[in-house]
Image (tube, rainbow, N blue to C red; front, side):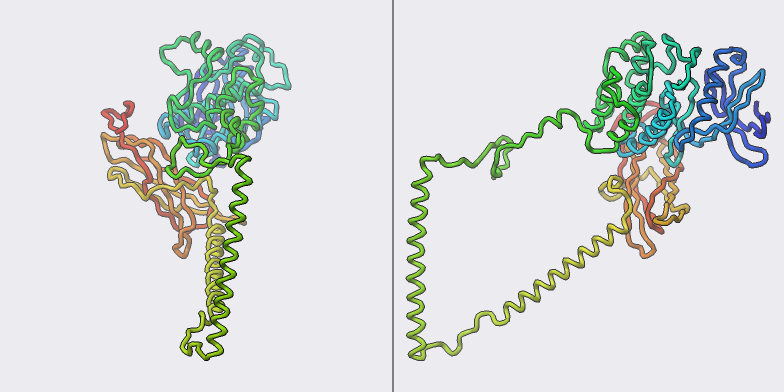
Length: 510
């Protein structure tokens, strides 16, 4: 196939192979535009059911126009071949990305990535299309962390009755990501995709599929999907929050009625703060008034008790008596002082060198108060200016210690270019990250970026959670930030050394 021309496209290389066919990189001979051409396996071309499924993928893709779904440019049907000519996405499948680049993806990165996935599927569902084969291998991620959904080969058009593809009792999709109703051969709808998306999100956060046991039989996996809940994500990656665990649990509920009913509901729960585990929402009971425990004891209860009703009257009587005695003493002192002052004045006894009581004190206090007010106003103005300059979303700012010195990791970054729009600049930062060690890998590698304007004033900071960096590995990639800046500095914010005797062996944390 290499070198063959299909319509106006010349095939240059093989991108990948699968059970149904192969995918090639091709270039338009006139426009120099790259495309991906999916060719049906020649051994399957004569199979009417396979041809119908392949044609169904073309019909499905032709109806979908969304930034997170791969675009279909053309479809070519020949007697001995079938071709889909599609948008070429330069990147990795999510499955490959997790295995070779990121490992478990931290929540702060996984949430915006998966929100793109949910937006794409929400759009497909609105068009009446259920994918039915959701898995990380059918989701692409680019170097700029843009998501593209692939392979609608067994998708079901809800508005049509494709009996040969959707009849009851026919199971389609990859086993590990199937919903219980798919396993049982029952009718599926968009909530089946929601289940598979929940399993996919589990794998993003943990680095593995929940039922991926190499020793388990297919029957055992089917039984787990139908009867057993997913294992807690914390079992494989401890830094997963209770809120995210609750979202996974709801998305992968066995009963479709207990799941998120669509991808928009799933996305809103993921990106919002209102969704929380039931155990947290049931504890909103206001405790009895308490005064702080001086010792800070976690077991202290209340240190104040209301006096008994029968003791209240005597207590008030004693308090009133004390007040009367005190007022009488003060009145006597004032009268005595007045008599002494008059007698001194009549005999000329007032002191000529008596110091005036704090001359101009009110004026000084007013001046001091004005100065403090001016200082506060200046500080508030400065803080407001900083907030106007800083345009990174608050959830993207992570406070970390200064750069970590890791001699075997080299890091280079620069602003490659910028695109000016009506509000802000879109900064693209080129990063070159390499591990010069041949026997030590690093987990939890993160990079801290500091952005500066033309006056060399810092206008923002950002932590990029990269993940694993294997021994001898070098990576080059871009990140996008939306802010006004002319310079960027970068440093290693965290890195966890992992000894390994083989680049492919599992790691042991030092």
